[in-house]
Length: 351
Image: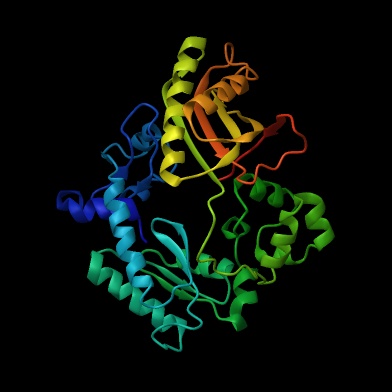
């Protein structure tokens, strides 16, 4: 979908149409969820601080999100998708992969299906969608973003290699800003440059992702459209209005996070054995601490003692916390011994 959250708000509030809006919580540390195209012309974009967005666009209108409404529209979209195929892999509320090789309407060309679905979405919701059609998920995703808004792009197998050759590496799935910077230092700027590098070289530089980049540069992506998936984890997190470092304040916020995690576990009927604590500090450094136990983690009484145990491994008195999160995973309860097993991770996330 095009500017999904913002488009729904502009549809439902006519006075917002044609104006620069950002959907997000209007607070000191609020973040833009979606920006309208009118706002994007000023450089406003998703995951950006509300404060930064306001500086870029002084006339920006901040709109509180209405997630239930977005879910209702998403259900309408999926109802339309199911009229054509049951091989649907949701990516987010407003995005999905569809395998229409054998479709319910016996339509021969994927582009005709995409065109029909786009029209039905507009007729049903009043919103525009962009579609990409190709022989694999990697290229279909790129094609869907190619001519936004209200776009329709087809990448034919015979044209795929030429298309990838002129593609900037930043457009390739899995290549975020830091990876792109590294590639630029290596002299890799386009798909053609990437294709010139050997598999051995790419895996030496990028590990397992080297194989992915090697294949994508050659138009190879054998991932199927998976219509049914198993939830791997349940988690929640909170960014604080002000950084916290006082032990009593951190414990209180940890307690509230445990309660929210307990609620989400019950809602999803999830059974996991590994608890992970996520902490982001004032300087945006991020760490996680995990522990795996034999028993299933469901309730506050089971989770809170472990969460406190994990927190004791984090130095925050001189290193204030801006975000705190908890998650439960590992349904099988895999662990190398009968005793709790500690795992320490340092993770860098790319957009």
